[in-house]
Length: 415
Ligand SMILES: Cc1cc2nc3c(=O)[nH]c(=O)nc-3n(C[C@H](O)[C@H](O)[C@H](O)COP(=O)(O)OP(=O)(O)OC[C@H]3O[C@@H](n4cnc5c(N)ncnc54)[C@H](O)[C@@H]3O)c2cc1C
Image (cartoon, rainbow, N blue to C red; front, side):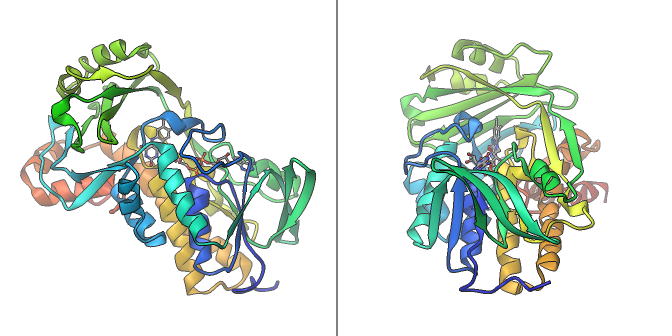
């Protein structure tokens, strides 16, 4: 088996130009001189919703971990996003949270929560990657992988001029939750990962509201999480200076609101009335859109005895999470920093590199996957400790923002 060739050699290929693909391209640029990104949607440079990313219209927040890692990969990213219209609030002084059956304390913990429309998050990322000058985009659809022995040698791609093979010894699968990698691997005669799945038993309805004058330009968030086994939640995120993007969620047994007025009425039924209070003087700006995601899935490449060497899955292509916790981008970008760190440390053989990558990047999925369990199984007394002890509050919020393992805050309570 040959070692992966070094700098100045073969150009790696990234499949998918969503957030995960662009973050992976930024990571690869720390080692390779060129990167090719294959994307099925034609990209026109605008911050617009596109068919390849059906969740584009839903509210998107960037957790602290996502901000940290985006700035590591592309220094200055968060400031550029704010300059382009993204919002940034101090956690938890400006993030008003009802959780664990109580109004959470509002201490400044030194982190931020950010929000921006999903197309803007991606567009700023793409502009910074393109600015580097070493990334080429190809409009086409990946349809298969080629291998020689246990190493990837290329991908099959369909473009407007027909079907062809692109040679590559390092391919990042960033094609999102609908990744066809399992079929590609099977067709190439290779093993496929086992899939963990969890039913996502709620829907999301999102609508934009105009803020009253006294709230213009203020970056506060409001978040209401149901106390287990309750299911009704809500979230208000700032968008630009004048808009609030409001999302409510509920169980499949609960009829979702169909209009902004029904959404406001639903907000009044949450455990805390703070979202209904905020919306009292807000003006609906458009329709309410419904999004359902029936399952969260985690493709366990990390458990395979022999992942195909040189094939590196990232983002939703590995783990497509319950959107309730808003972690998908943080996990994807965290995985991209793991890729960058491994490239910096030296490549080794393709199989060693691939195995190390898939195992380490599974750690990011594990933290995110376990969060729901931590919240639902919060031990008695956690709310009291979070309220009275700033260290427990900080540890709890750090786990939410994926800075710390979710296991940490719980033992802190038991002590
Ligand atoms: C309702 C909802 C709310 C959410 N809220 C948040 C939030 O607040 N915060 C957060 O961090 N995350 C949130 N997420 C998750 C977040 O949207 C995803 O985790 C993140 O966008 C995943 O990025 P990705 O690049 O892995 O996949 P995607 O964004 O799905 O991108 C995949 C890309 O691959 C392309 N592609 C697909 N197949 C092919 C192919 N065969 N060939 C070439 N190109 C291909 C697609 O066109 C697309 O561009 C939410 C998700 C949902 C559903």
